[in-house]
Length: 335
Image (cartoon, rainbow, N blue to C red; front, top):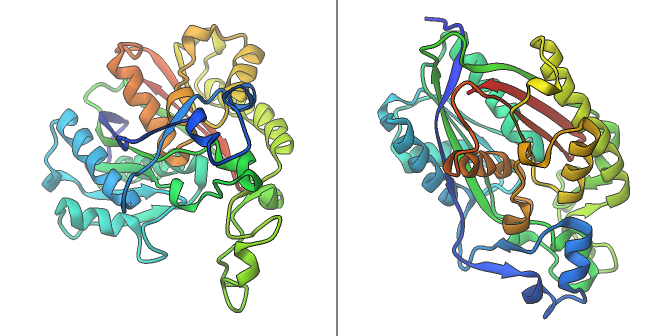
């Protein structure tokens, strides 16, 4: 049966125990704590300490979310996994996770939309629930970046930014028509793909991975970014998509109680908040402790905001992201 509105019933997270500080990185990269903090706001991040896949962290986050939602895994009708760092190339992480959790033979698929992947996944789950195709959905964002970073001076522009982690939510029908997910807003602009991408291994190449992809001055097997270009677009698209969500629901910036942005760069989030004239207390930032966890960053930040009491019933909460693709998205909720 179709429902009028969906609601987040529980939020979970999982983080590796190993903390990697900027000083730790400075021992293998020509950098300093001051250099990293000035450019990104990051002081430390989490890295896995042994073999571990995105679904391993995802399972822990999912179990946390299920417990908080009071929903048994047997009640889950849909699993969506957002990641740019899958355990294996194929099949999907969602299928692997569903098996690890012991779900029924339910739909399970991945969304590979990088930093916007969690909100894209949220939109998919919301549509399935409201359309009557599922009652409870599990949406997970999970990333293992550390095993794929160029942690040398050559790769420091990107290598110092990313961390490992997972976040998860359980969605279900809202028992209050005034509370829940109000709307989602999704955008993409593929012409800027080369500004932030991981080019190899690539099916368009034969062989998919060449020796030169791992060496040289700018190896294609590691993430590459034109930082200033990405920054310029992020500080434009973020406020656009936040205002779009508010205006779609007949609301303004003054009605927004809390903004939970993707944690890409603290300077981006500060710039956006200032442009929107949002008080710092209304913006959740935790990139200083976890780095950029891509598809996991928003649910991890949401989990933290709930834990510290910043999210309260009836509040207007906006989730927003911008990242590789380029893609950008927002979701507006009345908690």
